[in-house]
Image 1 (cartoon, rainbow, N blue to C red):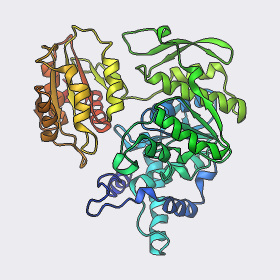
Image 2: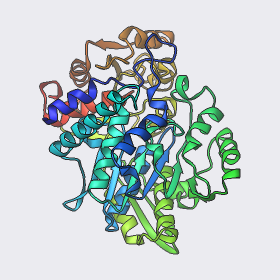
Image 3: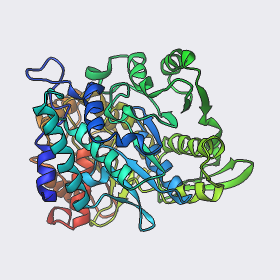
Image 4: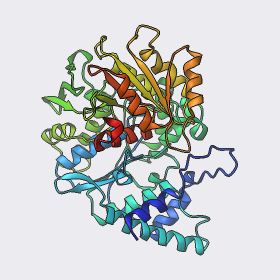
Length: 463
């Protein structure tokens, strides 16, 4: 019953999205709440033993979750945080307030809970109450629920894995539902229009509940309105917490700093989450904190909000790592909306700074579209003669091949280099980039996690 055995058992279940609908053997297990409800019931319904906030969306839901959890923790509330996916270790997905910090679940606790949930699940399968063993995400969600109940958290912030309506997290009864920006992603599972995807995300809304969101794509706004109307929702618009565009301080460390009026007080926001797009996610987290304070009996002062925003830990989002000879900027942009946000942030870099793009993505993402957004910014045959692009295939069954990524570059006439794997890609990117330059690693959460691990471990590839 070791931690390594637990992790091996978890990953042996395979990823829910390793096969697309229509593929031979594809099983859409993740999208049936009856299974997770049966499992949770056998576990004593741990998800009903703590209050929660549920957060869905295409982009920004992880940043919003991390910021809100940090605010609640700073306010002195014993807080749980469940996010996905992880960058390096699976424990990152489950955190709670301990030792004065939001800290990932310990290896021993993870192993103990994994085998407990697994034993219960196997019994349910043997009894015919479950048709098959729980999926990876169902197991992780059940472990998170059990850990939060065991730790008696005062509130848990839960990030939806994908979609919302049929996501395993959606068996809770949330105090608040937050919907971040919606765009096209996972279209083969959620629908191929903004309206269809929005309806899936809106599945986290509850009758007489509270929705916190922001004005966004017109089709998303309209669909949210249609879904919300019969639910008698209380709607909270977080737009009041977005700064004026000309009030944001530009800084070399990429932090978001700006003045804001917060509950009648003029304050100075300071967030480590970089990029203009993060101002929307921070606003959603602040609006949720204010609503919890005003309507749900959670004591959250402006001081706690400021501290929570300032102390937010959410790596891999425009994160600058300086352990290598050349600084590396890591960003988990893994869909077109994320790529556009990264492109916007890169526009603020010095024009004369040489930079190298290290890129790899998954085959179920729009590879060509992401390439069209990012590759021209590093085109050595265009205005960026000192720049380079290195493509590396991710070690993941869903990875786009080098040939697929090369084809996208060739369609635009942009020269690229290829590397056999990510360690080799990092080594080559660092070799190509002068000391005054910058390596930008992006395209997938899996890519960023692996590069970050190599950089922080001081691996030979990062020297």
